[in-house]
Image (cartoon, rainbow, N blue to C red):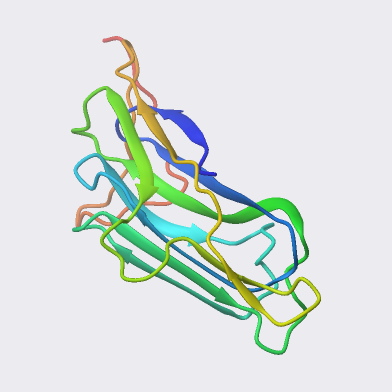
Length: 169
């Protein structure tokens, strides 16, 4: 379940990817697609997610193709418990040139194999499951009297935490 989030051009935002599993998980994989002309994926965060403790996690971000692949494998660690929770949070920046509209985050159907996929342990041998997927995305709007962006130094490097005051004159 990818949440829907509102944003304006230039804004940084977090888009949670949540899931429900009926049995503990040994591994999980997911490949997503987004509109790279409007969204730039900066990072993937697992902070506070059900996979936060798992050491074998990989994410492959391709901002040209507009794809991200997520994979987690518990290995010798404890299984991911059943129930509802966060898989990961996608950290996007809406490109300043993005126009108003809905930009979906959906399954990447160009991926080989089953997508998404869980390997779960329901008390017998591990089994593969293809969970139901619900897409979401980013709703971009153009707001009058607002400015979104970031501050850079003379070399074009972003200055984290910098603020700007705008005056009418």
